[in-house]
Amino acid sequence: MPTPRPATSGASASSATGRTRLSGPLRGAGLMVGGGMLLGTVGLFVDEAGRAPLEQVFVRCVIGCAALVAYAAAAGRLGELRVDRRGLRVALLSGALMVANWALFFAALQRSSIAVATLVFHVQPLWVMACGMLFLGEPRSPRRMLAAALALLGLGLAVGPAVLARPQGAYLQGAGFALLASLCYAAVTLIAKAQRRLSGFALATWQCGVGALSLAWWPWLHGLPREAAPWLWMTGLGLVPTAAAYVALYSGMPRLQAGQIAVLQFVYPITAILVDRVAFGHRLSPLQWLGVLAMGLALWAVGRPRRTGTLR
Image (cartoon, rainbow, N blue to C red; front, top):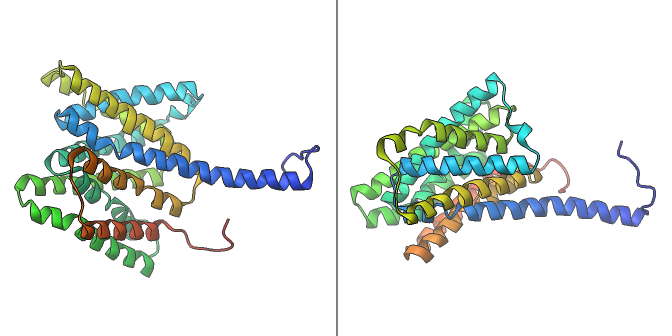
C-alpha cells in the first residue's frame, strides 16, 4: 500500500494525483517529440559531412557511445549497462544489425533525398507486424491487415512520384538501400521486444559500442578527414541525432502507451521532410503529402492498443 500523506487534504491529494497522471504522459510526449525532431536532422548531418557511410557510422558510434556513457555516469545509470553472457549475445547481435542499418540508411541518403529515404525506411513497423504474426503468434486482425495495405498505398503515393521523376539508377538504388535498412531495424526491434535483460537506453549504448569496435578497421585502412568541417558535422551526428535523441526517446517511451508511441514516432519523418525542404529545397507534392498522411494513419492503427475499459 502507498504511504499516506497525513498533511494532505482530500481535494489537494486528488489534485496532486491528477497532476501526476497528467504530467507523466505530457512529459513523455514532449520527450518523444523532441527526440523525433532530433532524429529528423540525421540526413542534414550525413549530407553536409560528405564522407563515406561506414566512416560516418564509425564516428557516430564512437561519439554517441562516449556521450551515452557520460550521461549514464552523470545520471547514476551505469548499472544498466552491465550484461551477463546472454545479454552480451543480444547486444552483439543487435549492434551488428544496427550498424548495417545505419550504413545502408546513410548510403540511401547520399543516393536519393532525405525525404524519400526516410519515408521508405519507415515501412519497418510493417515488417515488425508481419514477423509478429508469422513467428510470434500475434493475432492477424483485420485492422492490422487494413493498416498494412493503407501504409503500402501511402508509401506508393509518397515515394512513387519522386522515383518516377528521377529514374536514375542511383536514386532507385538509394530507395532499395533504405528498404534493406528498414529490414535490419525491424530485426533490431524484434530482438529488443524478445529480451528483457537490457533497457532501451542500455541497448542503444551497447549498439554504439559494438559499432565503434566492429568498424575500428576503417580509419586504419582509409584514415580520417583532416579538414575541420567534416569533423564538425560528424561530431554533431554523434551528439544530436544519436546521444541526445536516444536519451530523449528512451526517457519518454516508458511514460506512454504503445499507440501513443506509434503516432509520435512519425515526428521523425515529418521533421526529415521539413529539413529536406528548408536545407535542400526538395518539396513534396500534395499527392505525396497525402501518402505521408496515409502512412501516419496506418502506423497509428498498428500501434493503437485495444480499448478494454475507460480511457486513462
